[in-house]
Image (tube, rainbow over the protein chains, first blue to last red):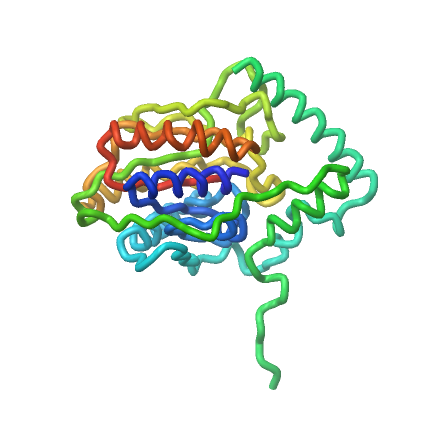
Length: 127
Length: 174
């Protein structure tokens, strides 16, 4: 929900008079919410600012976001970075893909999810 | 000769559909994602080279004692935070992403510059591409409750960005 959170925040800032740009990796979530400006990198979640240990890709990603910020003609402007994560695109098939999990793995995920939820709940109540 | 089309799966990952199917199979009700028809828009008031940019992140400050938050750490809900935080941009802070659902199969979270572009921003300022970075960056709690984000966190972030004299804001989710 990270991408949804910053999308909601960007909308609020923009309505309050501050121009915004989002750098992100989840195109559908950001565009479904509806934001003013978005630089999309078609990378695994966690790499919104560029490839690891690749200063050039990080500088280019920021530069593209800055160009979107200054040049977007209207709301819902999305620009996709030309950078590719790697030549083999099979990584896109893995994220939360049930077709690639056994029933045992799915049951294990359910147990993990319940555990995570319980920890988060305790932490939230403490906060 | 056949045209060399890209593979059919070579599109942005449909995260909403993937997670909907996934949680249904796990036995949960489908999540209703935020969706709006109207989108606000505010043009930049001055050139970027004269503008001060604020940075908003969903990364969390490293917290000793709440478990593994390093590279390859499993999802660590104990490292989450639930209120907006701010810290100085004078130095690169130790902010982590073990508390959120990034792609743990294809990403190791070893290089903070992939989720927190403060060093790149400082370079852009040095080059004169950007007027400046505000004195603080801000942390946005990622909350499944859209109401909390919209009614509490977003107004607080707007207040802090204004307080810091930001002309524009860069937001980076994970």
